[in-house]
Amino acid sequence: MRKTLFLKLIIFFLIISSCEEEKQEIVISTPDPAPWRNARYDYSNTGYYPGYGPTEGVIVDTINIGRVYEGTTPVFDKNGNCYIANEEGIAYKIDSTFSIVWSVDLDTRISGSASVLDSVVVWVSLDELVLGVSTLDGSTLWTIDTGDMSGNPPIIHSELKFGVLTTQHGFLFIFDLYGNIIKNIDLGENNYLDYIPAPALDEEGNIYAVTRNDAYCFDMFGNEVWHKTYEEYYHHFGNFVSYYDGKIFYKTHLEYVSGFYIVSVDATNGKLLWMSNTNHQLHGFNPYYELTITDDFILTPNEFVGIEYFDFDGNNDSTTELEDEPYTSVLIDFNNDIFFGSRFGYFLYSFNDSSINWSLSIDHYYIYDLAVNDGKIFFVTREHPYLWLIE
Image (cartoon, rainbow, N blue to C red; front, side):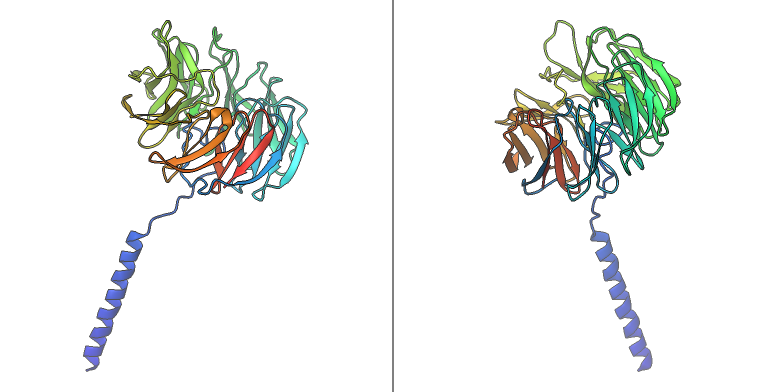
């Protein structure tokens, strides 16, 4: 009888153990995204947020921070603190309760978004400076004199801990987070545009930069990996180069042809892979129209239609037609919820699979690109100098 009872107990525990294993197998992991450290979220400038955005669409609070430079996006550290500066040089650290921790006068005109990692937040100045600022108290730790103006944000590699910046007249600066220049590379005079796009970085620290007709790859020490000239291009349009899965992507325009195209280039050798087969009207000089790259698609706003989806072979897979077309880059989260500002920033929308989740009247001219932290959206507006918090 004892043997029978013992066998029953063994069978019981085996069944319980099997049930526990089944439970473990069906558990879906909750995303734990890295902070929104760079202007386009990551150092590859994908603009894709692998966490959750807001579900309600409620204005929680606003802070008057002063007028910011065009296209400024808030950035966040690992503790949820937000960093943003206005164009007069007043920089702010704002904690997760939307309270100002510090505000300091950097005594220079800030040109846009920062990048933040560990104890340093990096801003670029219209006065030809790169500034490393302490996240603890806002004190200036170091400065780099670039000798050339830039309206681009710095891009920081979060694992390899170095930064890059491209300037107006074709210089690429590679620097460490102690304020030392690793290398300054002259990419050549940019004959047409008054800026060169912000470069993209890959996991290994390779740097991808684009000028008027040329694309470059350098390693993190500034050694050239490849350089290609594309005669068929007119010049690049857009503020960012993007990298994803061994390819770089950016927008271009062809001479004597209206409209703009998405270009894909092999990141290993610079070979042109394709140009998008739809002559869609990307609004080239508008700093709020960047590519957003997910595991499935390349998304781009089309101010005449809505949102266009391209596959990774350059085919226009589909178009979501919208009554209120986007006037910001598209933000997409882990749930495939899509967020954007429309009508010059009068409305903020969230939708999924063409169905509107919520819409919110902002009634402020021009929303700049959106950032997400802890399920909340943050953005600034142009005409009315507020930082907004939406949940």
